[in-house]
Structures are given as C-alpha cells and as structure tokens.
Length: 117
Image (cartoon, rainbow, N blue to C red; front, side):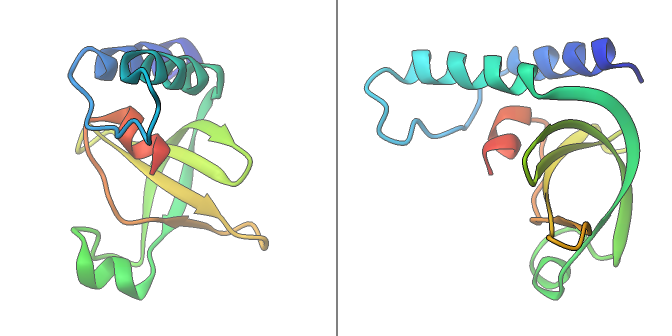
C-alpha cells in the first residue's frame, strides 16, 4: 500500500457516518471536517508494524493475541493509526517511551473515531 492508497482508504471511511463525538464543539460538522483534514495531514507512507496488547485489552476486547501485525498509516506524536487489512478495520495504538507500540483495544471501519480514541 502507498501513502496515496492510505489516503484513499481514509477518505472511503469518511463516506460513512462517523460516531465521533463533537466534544462540546459548537458546530459538529465543522469539527468533524477539521478532524478529517488533520488525519489526512498525518498520513504516512504505510509500513507493517507489530502492535502489542495489554492484559486488559486481551480480556475485554476482541484482541486475544499478544501482538498483531498491521499497517501504520497515520502518526502524530505517540499516537499511531493502524489498519488491519484482513479485517478491513482501523485501530489506534500508542507508542511507549521505550518505543513499543500498544493497541488501545478497539477497532472499527470508522477511521476517524479510532484516530481520536
């Protein structure tokens, strides 16, 4: 996958309604539009990464394995948006100070809601 293909994937996700909360923004539509633009701006050249799970994630979500290999498609500071090609779903992961990537535990076809955690 290329960066342009990752952007197309995100835009495809944006075509469906998002369950992203507006977090008190006075104009939800403007807030969502701005968030979509920011996500596109943080898209990176995709690469396969290994994301680990915590005990809580394994016990309380559908992620049962100790780690998963997914495509990193967007990044901002320690937050990384991953894409699971087999499930066609996005997940947010956080990179620790030691450089290890941890899934927060959720996944869906809604890229924006996953990106915002």
